Length: 307
Figure 1 (spheres, rainbow, N blue to C red):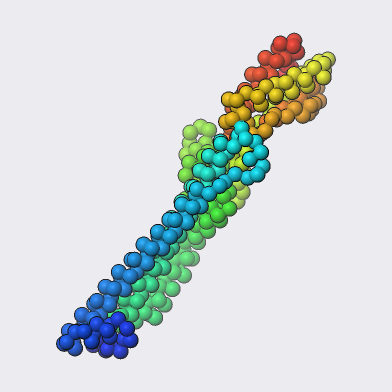
Figure 2 (figure 1 turned 30 degrees about the vertical axis):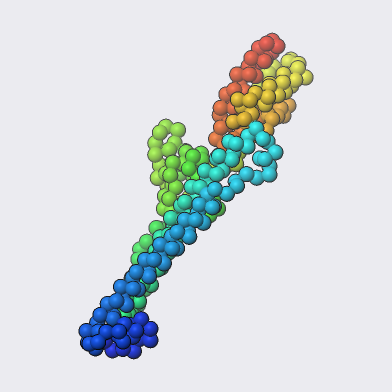
């Protein structure tokens, strides 16, 4: 291998041949020039890797701090701050995860190329090595199909922003709040406190209750002999008061609550429905407040809520 390195160094058209001319003794000079060339290849490889990582970091930083609001939500200035914070956090998490993946890929490609170049400089045959690695890769691919499936599904999930940390999702196998998202698994915590680890490749459909906005519904059953006009006016008054309350308009509600009127006719009651569009995953808080205010308004008017 030493003779091959010396001969290869003599015929090198750039680095190694240049160092060879600078050193007096041919045998020693060839080995020294080869060693210097290998060291330079490795140094350049690490420098390029660090530069690429720095560029990826800048791109990720810009993507994470970009504007996340849509025109629809800008119209509702009271809820802008809350939606802005949530969407920016989602963008930041997605950008950081994708940045980590890109950095790993860049490291593998750049350092792998540098190692192959060094092996070639050492006159180690690369073709059989690449063939062996290819065969090994195929074997590992067959044995790790599920793992590859999980990673591919995780990549598309991140690129499409299907869900993020803090979202309440129905993943089929489990329903809960997302606590962590990786390329391989998604970690959920359900209402009972159990932690579920769901492989991304096994998720065939996602129901996201927290993306963009949520909706709070409240069905109000009243007796058939109730004054329908009065009930509707009372519910509309409650909706207007809730929308006018700064504690809710600025941090919980996206649009003014709507009264749909009689939504259903049951055996014993007329059912009115009140709907409110809220910030993601905040519908339960708004629904509880609506129940309290509707109950107080109907009690004040002497209208009973039926079963």
